[in-house]
Image (cartoon, rainbow, N blue to C red):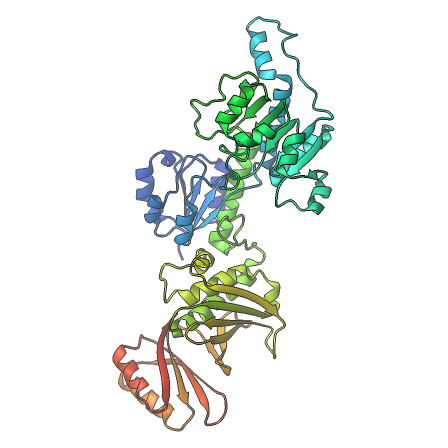
Length: 528
């Protein structure tokens, strides 16, 4: 099998390039491509992975050319330059490196807070101009002041920790911050209006979403404590910049320090030129340590995915660690094939899918298995479905998906049972034995034992003499070679199942002859 190919289209550390090479990946490093979208589009079709920073734009149009692409790795936390829905639709994993620049960004926020409190940039400028305006720059101490943290996740909690070390009181607004976590990191969890009323300094560390856009709106700023100083090293658009400029001019807000802006590069902005306003050109992650960290991290993550199937820090798919990937992968394959089996037999609209994990498989990470099962069931109806977009498509279609874990029945250590609700309920059970091969072990409450093959025939029939002979004669006359032949029945003379692997696809004419055998109730051609 040829080595996976990765294209690096932005400036990345040479050490990251070496990681790809050391892991046996064929890597192309062309940092100028990020600014040449036409050349990037012409090249991307040959690659399994794309590693980028902020210059490259993975747009929906570009991804149309990325016919082999499996993963996009963003060296950094922001994925604004990647069309996530388009990537998801195409089954492309999108990874970022949310922790590689956490310390650096947190330290920049603290540095901005110090600079704002003591008006350092202006004082430096006028001093170097030969002025000595000691009395003009009266600052404030940080000790005993209240810092309001909006968004107390990874970076926000680091900022809070540093602020507590400076003897500040820290309050935090974050709907996802639990009371237990707040106590653990030493902050007081509050609502936004309470934070606005109490904070002497406000720092933002939340992603940019529809809910957080302009979280510091004109109305919110009027509720803020007079003289408050605002720091934004997170995302442009979290603060209404026009409203903030007006509030600074009116003397209500005491100052602002911004590293991010609604429009970047920020060649002009309402905040520029205002007193006690500090602006930096998106330097939050700009330290040599952070650049090295995120580059090495994205190289390791992409390599692990392309070589082992491990998924780390994906924004559009559940994580699978490198350690658990070898154990999870066979069950992911089982879930997909079992779902495909049921999907190919289903008629009518699917309304619900229930996946039951029985035994030790339930102790594993079942999220990717569930996605695989959904994709398998729905692929006969939706050719564009894949493991990455399966959950979202099922939700959009109003299909209920349930995950259930319970003890394993019988002698099998682990089984996956899938139930599909459509024109009528259908279910099947599968397992993975020590050989790692997915097998189907139960269909319609009838025991079987069959591996999946590219071409198969499924027959439901009456358990009466003559069927096997007639069926075999038809296959022989048509020149169709049988690979495996599996039978099961509920009782002698009752309902029976015949599940056969063949070496070539059965055509419509032969399938019609099989269906005409007197004992046959239903015959279906299956492909895996």
